[in-house]
Length: 305
Image (cartoon, rainbow, N blue to C red; front, side, top):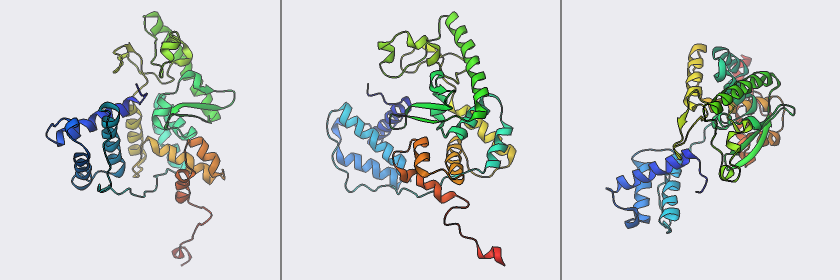
């Protein structure tokens, strides 16, 4: 009802379950501020969870009390909060990116290329629809991104032909689905109710559809979703091993590399902030700390011996 993502929905449900089980299956209506504090302290002290994990647990419990039970959960002034570590993002060199792309192929290579070439988050890339790509203006529109915001980012020239080829494959697959009585894709919010025929339109189809039809976990309708994140993460892990890279990387590393390499090329921080969709420029500034040769580049005295 509140248009939360399916991942957030599942996460909140799991944290509510853990909260209830921690207190020996007492009903949440019988508990309050003290029990919530005990659970959050348990996560920080005994489970050693990260600050983001503890905050996610708190958000799930607050949602339960405010939106489901209709009551205020209270204050949490003396909660033991997990410390938020200050970590630098892992960044690949241009050669490392090139090496990994040489080891992957097919749709995985195209997706990883888009992560690096457009600075997309993995779920943003997988949720791209045909209508979101503007080839003429070399632009990709990212819909309902983090914070429920739309933004535009760049489309690399050398990715246009592979992307157009992929879209033609999607067209043929969509025509086959329609012929078999399917072809309706899940739509955001109330669009499907307002415009019932949009779900069958080619422009709304995912650019990276799954190989098989599956049941929608919310509606139970059988249709074609986009491919799973695990497929891309697996391809990245295998490519990393083949190349011999020892850095701990994931799909998000290519987004970090996109931002860092733009800074190295002399683009200003505000432009990169807009491309990444960061609300605060301070978030984007983290990439200035991983530049090999920034404005404050210091040469080691060992190089002069």
